[in-house]
Each structure stands twice: as structure tokens, then as C-alpha cells.
Image (tube, rainbow, N blue to C red):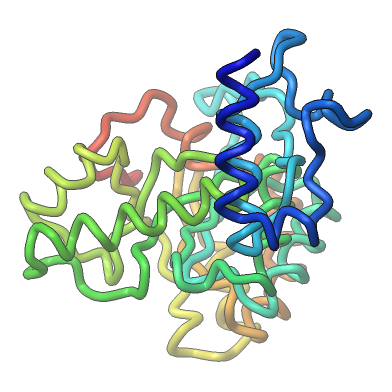
Amino acid sequence: MRIGLVLLSLLLAAGCGEARSSAVPSPSSKSHHAFRVGGQFDAQVFGSRLAARQHGWPGPRMPVAPPPRNIDCRQLKCVALTFDDGPGDNTGHVLDTLAAHRARATFFMLGQMVTDGTRDFVRRMVSEGHELGNHSWDHPSLVGLSEGALRRELQRTQDVVQQVAGVRMHVMRPPYGSTNHEVEAMAKEEGLAQIMWDVDTLDWRDRNPGLVAKRSAEAKPGDIVLMHDIHPTTVEALPRLLDELDRKKFTYVTVSELIGSLTPGKAYHNG
């Protein structure tokens, strides 16, 4: 208890202006229970939450993911819908449409896109059972980067997503699908399996909702479908393609649900 109080005093001294404006409770306040673990004051929990507030991120509450599902893709027609390059202004509409179809997906996010304006989308993804994936910090081709630059691209994105949503990601998609032995080794070091794709909707090139829906609907059981949640035309195509996949009796799963046990560094796709 004495150690916790000392750490508390140091933390408040370091960020006293923010602490006052955020009304961070003291150990003697009635809300002190928010920083208790097993009935004891936990200085580490208090410190991490204070640091989060000082950086502008949400305070104590982190999203809670639903329990894991027991899905056998050997028996069901499974398809993994994936969305790259977000979160962006359109991500909320994508989440709304997926929720209407009780569909789960995987979002491969750029670290620089996780901002004050989009962090709630990331938190919502977790609470609605979607999977979060690392797509680098700012979308360079990872092949040819120095070891340090490659590590920063992955680590910074890991860190910002964990800070915002409390999730440590286990899958990544290299920008442009460009990978080599160095990327594989760094992904392994960061605990990230590489996820490629089987169906490329080319929604980044052809901003045509009809084409995007048609290409997506050609998915076969076990396929991973590539889309981008940053394009309004993809948002427009999504209800149409889900209606068609519903008609074909597909089950929408995350990539981890589709593949099962994942090996960090290894590249996966259905083909």
C-alpha cells in the first residue's frame, strides 16, 4: 500500500495539470475502487490509465470482446471478409452493415489512421467480435526497408491499437502483399501471421459498387476477400454482396476463425 501511494504521488506530480482537469481519483476517494485489483490499489493500472488520458485516449474502460465462437469451417461454407487501410470516415457504415447481417470480419488497419476521430470505430470492432490486424503505420512497401524502419512500421501500429482498444494484434497484412524473408522474420518477432487474400475486389481501382459486389460474390468456401473500408463505393457495394453471400448460405468469419492455429511469420491464403 505504501509503495502504491508513493507511485501515485509521483504520477500526479508528473502530470498534475492533466490529473486535475481529468479528476483522477486519489487513493482515499470514493472512486478509488476503479484502480483496485483483487481489493488492493494497483499503481501500475493507475499509471497506465493516467498516461492514456494524458495522451488523449479513453480512460478506464476498454471494449470487451464477445466470447470465442465454436465454428467448424470444414462443415460450414466459411468466407473471411477483410478490409484494409482504415479506419476512416466510412468505417462506421461498414460496421453497421456487417451488424445487420450478423457478419464478422477482419480489419487490417494503418496505425496513422487510428486518431481521435476514428478510435471509437476500433473499439466498436472489438466489442462486436471483429478481428483487428496490423497493416503497417503508413502503408509503405515493407520489402527493402531497413530492419529498424520495418520494426517501427509494425510496432507503432501494434502499440497505438493496444493503447486505444486494449488488443494486441496477432495477424498482419503487408501493404501490396509485398513480403520477403526479412518481413517474415520481423512479423514472427512481433507475433504476427501474414494474411494474404484469394479474392481481390479491386475496389481501390474500380470505384464501381456493382463490380465490387460481383467480384466478392464469386468467393468460394475458405476464401479470404480483400476490400477497403475507406471507399464510399465499397460501403455502397457491401449490402449487395452480403445479400448474395447470404443467399449462398455463407458463414462470415474472421481470418483466425477461418484458419485456426496461426504461426507467426507464416503467410496464409486459401490457394
